[in-house]
Image 1 (cartoon, rainbow, N blue to C red):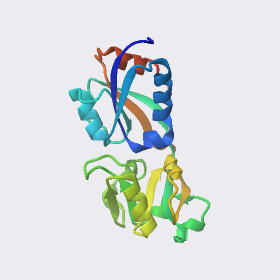
Image 2 (cartoon, one colour; image 1 turned 180 degrees about the horizontal axis):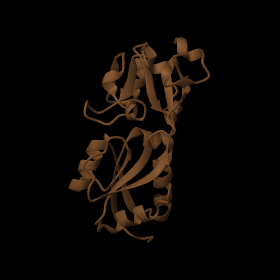
Image 3 (cartoon, rainbow, N blue to C red; image 1 turned 90 degrees about the vertical axis):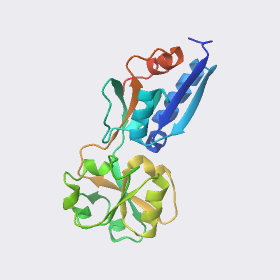
Length: 207
């Protein structure tokens, strides 16, 4: 209710900002609860799960890739973003209108991952990563992924929303093949007691 004070601590992955779902939710909540402090912390998905469970943050916004340890937590879908390929403008695939999974079979790939155990968007593409015949570069930041693609180290498999980051030398092409890209989900506690946090979660429209 208006006049309620307190704070909501939110962890997020970059795709939630680029996709627009996080900013829309923040704007809607701030308009109805201007007295509540909103704090943001960018975190990889696994860290969001851990920190929600431990009470260090209240809500996470994460892609639903390889999330483990979520028993007792609430995962609610907020949006879905298809996948694209980011590459140098002079890459041989840049002349195509779109890229297929088969086009990537022998290509060096660049993907976002906080570490080797982190779930990646390759789970949308490769059922057996060890069978991929070229190198896979795991990078812990979205800008790092795009930088390696711009350098020609490989082609980057990214959420289509990443196109909103305009970088020199980079072009994007839609990826045909997967029926769907990763979903952005909120992560929260099922037994949440905080009034401001419950109010924030209560304003989230179903995706």
